[in-house]
Image (cartoon, rainbow, N blue to C red; front, side, top):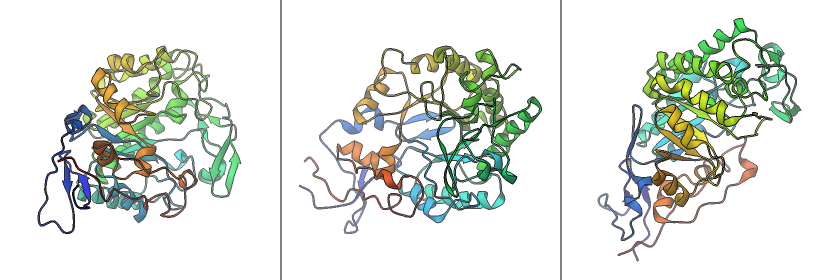
Amino acid sequence: MRPAEDYAITTGGQVHSHSPHAQSTTHVTRSGAIMSHTLFSPTTLGALALPTRIIMAPMTRNRADARGVPTAAMALYYAQRATAALIIAEMTQVSPDGQGYALTPGIHTGEQVDAWRRVTRAVHGAGGRIVLQLGHAGRISHPSLQPEGRLPVAPSAIAPEGTAFTPTGLQPFVTPRPLGAGEIPAIVRAFADATHLAREAGFDGVELHGANGYLLDQFLRDGSNHRTDAYGGAAANRARLLAEVADAAAAAWEPRRVGVRLSPWSPFNSMSDADPRTTFTVAARALRDLGLAYLHVIEDAGRRADRLTAALREAFGGPVIANAGYDGVSAEEALASGEVQAVSFGTPFLANPDLPVRLALGAPLNPPDRATFYGGDARGYTDYPVLEMFEAAA
């Protein structure tokens, strides 16, 4: 048994000792084959060279201030998780009318950019890489979150079920105002401008949030899009806004630093589609020629009969990140199948800042405190423990 030491996976994907008593950094040799597994091998997503294939998925935590400015706690939170091969930071609104919840960050003011720069410096200083997820909440909002108390916007005047998290507590969702065709170019510009600002803030790239029932997903799926113009009807029309936003973001930076997230089956935020296979294959194909960094697909690890990830990878023609319900074993299986190039973990990273170390060692995971997921202070945010000791094989 080795003495108690602190361990971390470096940017090279190796377990090293960082004991305060050690005179030098020492590589730990283990008899198991875990460190040679695909999950811990390097890969490239567009312009992003990654030391492993363990990605931190974006997760809304509601820790920004009332102006949508990232806080010092957010810089610490992300720096703690810099052993991820890549951090995808939480959904960040590209414009004031894109806000969907209280205390979510934005990237449309100079103050927000300056604060995000402190986050990226903290992550880079810890040896990590971080991209920013850009989104617009669309109908998943409330007048109290909108400029001048206006109605949220959406492709169609269809209210979602449920309640909005507002500054005064939970409020029922309202029926949104349909965007006019003449307003859509401003939405595209907002994503392009936010991409430019993310680059200024020091991010390594951006991810466009086309999933989980927010505006781009609302246009994409026929359960929320009943339009009859060029942005509604056939799947190609419903995918038009996503493709235009991706093209604009790629032009604002470079295609190899832009990823897209999709969720073919997710019912979250009252979402549905009559034919997900056709809709999402068409959407992935619409992105194919842009040369983007990756496609990030939310599809449960246990889904088998009607699984779409392989079809989306073929249509997209580039790297795919898998997400939803993965552990170390199922992640290895997904990588071995050739279906995906990397795997993202959400809640496991939330509760385990040192998740790559725990996966490498087969160590137990901290249980998440769901009561502290959204809003609050350091509890359940930056106070999860990291491994302090383990038994190493001779």
